[in-house]
Image (cartoon, rainbow, N blue to C red; front, side):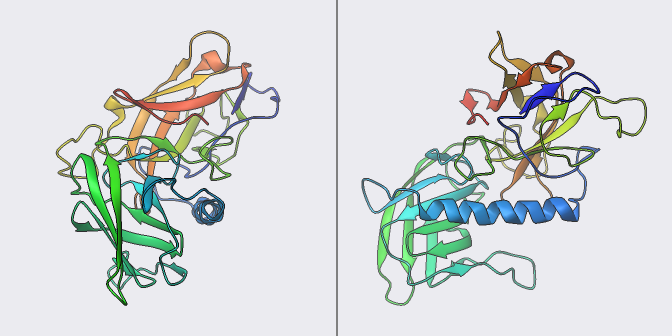
Length: 289
């Protein structure tokens, strides 16, 4: 993403992010942003069709955001498989608003627990890692319900595995970030004149997955603000990365497995031009966008 001086036009951004407008720590997702997220999900499905199948074994489990091979409880994951599922299916919520545990004739077990399913195709499954999954290398089984046949592998589950979504669904390039007040896409200004009140510092909403339990290792509640355990840095290629104050880090309301990090733009970034952003949670570092 790019940062320009207050009130001045900025150079075209090389990297950015998009999502929910949020003037407070948690807020309702505006309809325009909600449509954007749905569009991003469709892009992720398209990218997965051209992603390579696992080179070893019968399946590979990766983050649905970064495509790295580490995932976290209640994070969004993609399972690439040999051709296995009988067809393609998109999840529909039940009357209680829950995702299905069987979809397109497929069921997925992660560490012995049925995973919520979002999308199934012959070579790819999108799912949510169960909240109760063990930490470490855990077993993953995909079962074809019609005949009971199975394929198996492992997932590297970490308590925290931050991954940032990108707009081209590759895990790099332009990321999913919006101005948290105006919902504008990058490039961003250091100040947002539309902010209510006297505080005009630009706030950004960064969308990711795999970080919601950074401050709650017991996973007693998903609604714990993890901002004290999360750092966000922007590297503009000129010296040390610039830290952005984190005001909220945790689940994005209304979306399964999706996390958001709300940050304030550091005035040091004014006029610095293109930069790449990353999320740090302890020793875990996200992809850069």
